[in-house]
Image 1: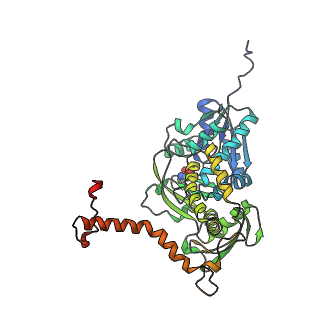
Image 2: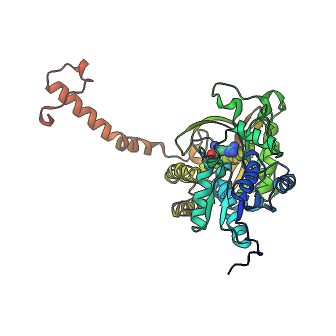
Length: 427
Ligand code: ARG
């Protein structure tokens, strides 16, 4: 028999807490509507927000405990690095800073849920975005029995309603009706959505940018950075050996100061919606460009070209929330096997919003000055080109001759022979 004096324990929910509007409202809502014991976990992947303050706010709103996990280094080493080796850019532009942070957050949440004995993980992602998919699919992969709650999908409040709800319930929030932006940061990129940005024609106001200067405010003098790679991994900046995390942080600062890495695109979400997305990714932009360039010097042509097709799949898969999938593991193995010789140094010039590779060197270089030079010392056998071209162009020549013969045989004048006529036998 249950002892009525013994109070029934409230169900414990672990909430992935960003400190933003949705998750702040979610703490209150889960407390009030579901009578849950809400424990918040904030995973630090390099957000510039004051996470200690977020932790205090979580407690003030009603979380019974609030945790911050510093996962910046793990993020750089185990999430950014594989993506960088794959030159992962969704739809050719977005370096996936939000998409690669979600699986790491889930890994940490699942660890904590097991430690604290919570059987439910909640997140603040809306029903229209990619992040809900990434969160939930990652939970399904890592903890198939875990229950999942998504309050923002249930409460049917608009962003304005949420701001009102927060005001009415004394919930401290970082947005106002005038600055209604939803901002998501990891050290790999900063994403800005909502408000005036939802009009694709409207130029983003300068005030939304946090990591990059507008070109008008950048230095007139270019700045050069040299990135050293070993087997695809950035290991030094301007000759100084550094951890990958520190290289990214430093490049965000240096390249951001030159206005590098602003991205303004119409993006295709997994849930079928086109959205206007603004990103700032100075470090990612420089590192991906440098890495791609070095690969251009050290990878054989067929491997380089084939890898590009893999890169595209890789970016799609990561964007679509399948980080913890067998295909992703297999693609990582392929990508890793291509990186053995991606060692060397790349020089990048930063100036007025652009990052341009202006030099590269590698002990594994396949570039041969003797073969490519037009000057003295040329080692290329020019006479070999004649035979090569004869063979290379032969199928085209044979085709052209056959077409001409058909055209003439059919009584068509040579002048009209360009008009393709099916031949009698193929009709
Ligand atoms: N569109 C990007 C993605 O799906 C960024 C999402 C940013 N999220 C946010 N809460 N602002 O990865």
